[in-house]
Length: 383
Image (cartoon, rainbow, N blue to C red; front, top):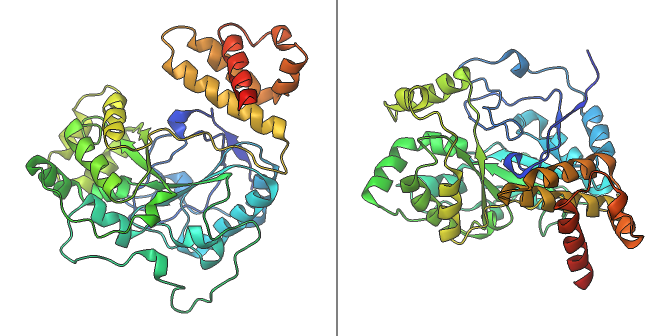
């Protein structure tokens, strides 16, 4: 068995700033669908058969923890099976001690969370909290998870070092994937949105306030204005503050699997997914709907925390700023992208270079990226 390693991705807003993913992972089984946030495909799942890479591999938790301790950029932590939740707690503790930034994913319809992961992980919304946002319910208000206490048979653990009852550490982002909820409630959503019905929201705001909801963008389905406008307003009313898009890149197998799950509630799913519009999802429609609902729709780049050096945090922050400028630029965006890649790779002390007048001698910091970096550094000093 080859040693566990971190695979590298291009860190950018489109993949929620993920830089590193594990080469092997104890994938969850069951029927939940989830989006691989690093690639945009469907995550390995037992539903509809497993991919060869989805068969649960030999996996040593200590190797994963050591890799997190060695990382300096965002490490992606996908969903876990119920019997491996202690791994998440160990990874969070390691990141809190080392300063490595994490993106922790959970599925909205709920994998259980270990009681020793810290209160903020115990209180992730599950079926009882997120499901009523996306579909009507006749069961009345469901109790939120915040006061549920430990599960039967468990013992209340003291928070692990580095965790906090107030929320995740500053270098940890909790991302709640809404794909499974959208699939489970596709028919209900479609009819409600057509009729402009707004069901009650049996959900208290606090569980969603500190989480980042991830909206999977699928062309011809979840990128449609009629769905987006109602859904964003509903999520905002439920207390969400940030909903970010993840455009899905579905291969033929992914499309068949997704269509199979939708077939019972949406008979036209096969044609929509296989013979519909093949253009990229309508990201501007998503941004417009989120903005109209008062939601944040950009995820700030998760940054390293102490004891990692401040120069590294600054370089990552500036690289993120340049990437966002490149995304928004009509011209000159490539120079910003190139500068951001060099900053991420070389980990230069950009503040010292500016202070010593050496920005001009960095061959990769070309105009307009150089001007953008100078403005950003000057603004930082003013504040």
